[in-house]
Length: 385
Length: 141
Ligand SMILES: [Zn+2]
Image 1: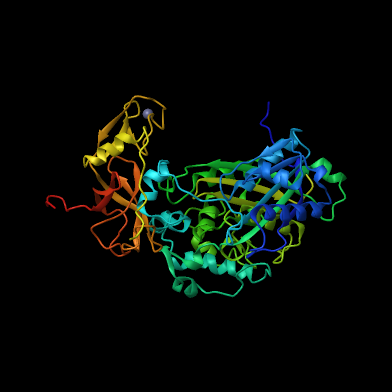
Image 2 (image 1 turned 45 degrees about the vertical axis):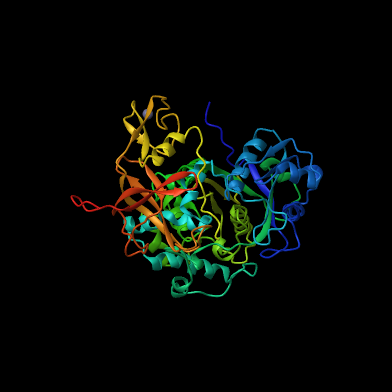
């Protein structure tokens, strides 16, 4: 038996974000899920009765009940910000095997306003509680970039190159009215912004916002029969993996094993190489992530990503458009950003992105969960399989 | 009064590690089948799944593998900020997170791969392993 593949068997037919984005003090988290879900269902003209699968990183039972859905497929995979890539991957397998007919993937997070938001407690008896928390980290900004100095020593990455990641993404955000940060910035601005956790400055950290997004997936066959306002976006390659929930236990602080495994799996299924990709989204919780992602997915060689970005290759007009919504650094970051990376890939493939790139036919959305703890990769296309 | 620093709570699988720390001794588990040390503690080897593992006292020496300097003090760390959160590579192979004491935590002072040695600090009911610059060879601290 040949390896199973869902290549081209499934399509994203509906995709939308919450109506508002950024600061939304008047909506609770569950309502952010619902707002995005209703927008995504309206986007493809389906109703609650059409949905028989629900996935989210919070509580899919709660979302199903809130929206009045009776699901026959439930996925509560919650591995951090890349969970939505995994939801799409699992939904593709479920749809292709006939477990269900139409899956709704939702995200809603009141990351900034904290309305109806879950708690974030630590447990002193967990391995992190015993062997990381006692050393005084205060959230991801003071943990996630811990490998950057090692990367700098190994490959000669400069502070200016790291800062250029934020500068280039701001250039993309300037073309996006929904982006939270749209004023142009320079490398000097980045390096003179407040140090959060040396060598990381404020402008090299993601935003903290409210918002959500949702996707509707079904089989490619069913998608062809639907009366869709916008063409389907086909799922042609998917991958997922994990490494360690403890950033201090990464095998190599200059590369993510989860990135490499997930990316290779997705590219192999799609039958593509990096050279085939027209448009790329790499989850950027911090400025070093696009650098790791470009290398770990094979777009550039080891140690080459810093100069590659600094030279403008990923900027508007560059040969590899990257994080074209402005990314977590300038567009939005609710805490789990992966949904927004997928939304931008879909917009670019539909030709409706605010900062639209010409002729995008193949887009990759790559996510991280936790601090290099997990990863998910999607290869998406607007070409009929 | 500032809130206390976060305190580790030992579990049955990690108790021997913390007992060692209480005696001023850093201990790691060693797998006989693989002839290797590993961390964090588990009652089986993370490579071969063998239960034939034993606790051994280790040298407490290592090098500064990577770090960042946290400018957002955690509860109880207000007096120390900014302070380094480091990953120390132990002489025996495993790496562990720690803080660096006995030297001002600046980028100039903290050079990757500099030699370090373990020291212990009281933290609630346990002794917590921290690291300080190693005394030059042949010189008593
Ligand atoms: Zn072993």
